[in-house]
Length: 571
Ligand code: PEP
Ligand code: MG
Image 1 (cartoon, rainbow, N blue to C red):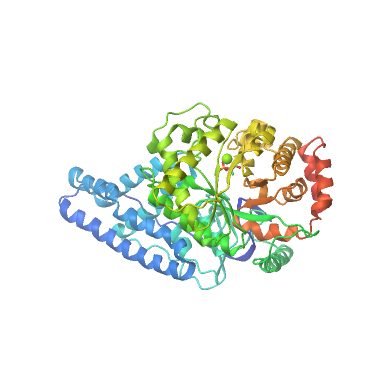
Image 2: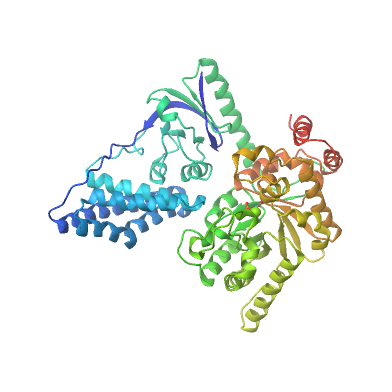
């Protein structure tokens, strides 16, 4: 049996014959055009055809998958009308007498390289939007018929180098049982689409197109991130069982959608979701989240050329609190810097961006940016249960300054006659070890804590969260991390406050028993982890785990902790 390993992008198991989706040959030659005017007309005709096609795909996606999934095609339509792109291509045709294909390819490649070189996932995705759109237009200019995945009408697994949003939008889940790609990560468009279509998928498996041919039987194991080529009868039988077991498990989880989260001993914890944009709300609602534990507002500021206005922010925050219908929504103020850059702020490059001028540090300095966001948040608070938290707090003084600015803006808004809720909770993220160690000092002044383990682990272990070579030190179950979590939870409870967690650790099945035992009140995670977590908690007793977790604090290593949790609670 040959196995290829990739990234598990969407859970489930699929077994079917492969269809290798090949890129058509788009060789482009430079030609000197004699009549630039008619060449520009040819460009416009190809743009118009592409627009028509995209409008059809957009409407179909809206109908089949919902308005939020169709937004990507609205973005693609915008690329087609973007004067920066279209005028640059036109310029090359009229000034340099280049043929339309060549000119378009040159300009698109320039934009793609620019976006790809930005150290930021979101911007990298903009590069793939331009690649997808320009390929469509080039297809028309070159007169190439692109392969349609929409016509596949038997059970199939798609194998491709990558799948563009227009490819994934054509997939009919009745026939497309799974897919595997050479490139891509968990946050690539194809991975996101596979999760919303609930099609098992493995991305970034490097050699799938080289090793698999159309007609070969393959298995996509989206639980483990494996692609199995030409399986034996026994393997097919084993994976058929795995597929059916998973389907049964999902059906069990689905029954918990409208249930409260309860533990075996009748306790309650809150399971909330992390979101990046209002577009994520559908998944949040479908997966039965009891609130939003982290709304990362920085995405509102990214992928554009200027800061979002107060009005634009107000609309986004209002939409989220309204759609959550009174459930708590914790909105984090701007956390820019580190791996999230805003090119238009033109900040100087730093030696250690994760230890540099970011998040609350930047907001306390760039006061107008911060105050605009605070006003938008305060105004939105009148429409639901909005809570505000500040990121990357290191000292009490920072928290006090941020809170004072918030209260000043509130007073001004109220004086001007705007409605603002009077019961907004104001909290902070605990992601810098100084705040965990001195949590008792902070607990007197905050309304809540939310532990950001993604950063807290990197700062505690001095191991960059983006650096593969030191990833062995990135240890969520290390007793040092567990002790910090305990300090934060205990400090909150001693002052009558609540403590949540919004780092990835909160949705991790090994961490969940430990965190429950340490007394965590709220667990905020990606929407698709909520139902499995709710199901897991049904079997866990808070009281019993309190004793177990305190024993874990004095084990020697993260490995021992993990092993003890697995053998005691995950059989
Ligand atoms: C964290 O640090 O755990 C966190 C949730 O914030 P981010 O991942 O956005 O840095
Ligand atoms: Mg963080």
